[in-house]
Length: 111
Image 1 (cartoon, rainbow, N blue to C red):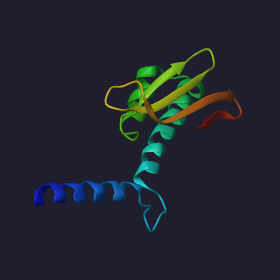
Image 2 (cartoon, rainbow, N blue to C red):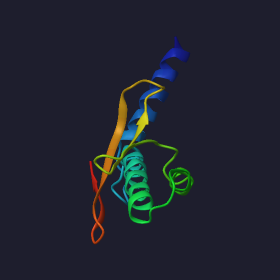
Image 3 (cartoon, rainbow, N blue to C red):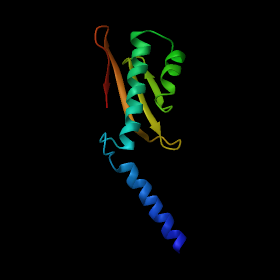
Image 4 (cartoon, one colour):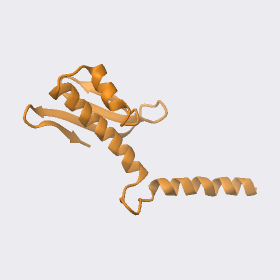
């Protein structure tokens, strides 16, 4: 019984740390994951549509910093979607979409 209670308090503590904002930056760990998908969508869009590089090159450029978030390319809308997959399910977490505007403005990130 004591072990079960200790595990319960440990799990609640971990969840509290994930949801509690950092005192210096005000960011939560969940916000940092959202930054990862936003970064991947925006930089991938810029690399693919503004710099006109290959998909493989853009994937290699954004893969490490974005915590390997999944992405999809919509060539008709000229948009990149990025998100984390929840243990292989179809439920996307922290989705971000970047769309190409024009040559002057580049790509715009939308959440």
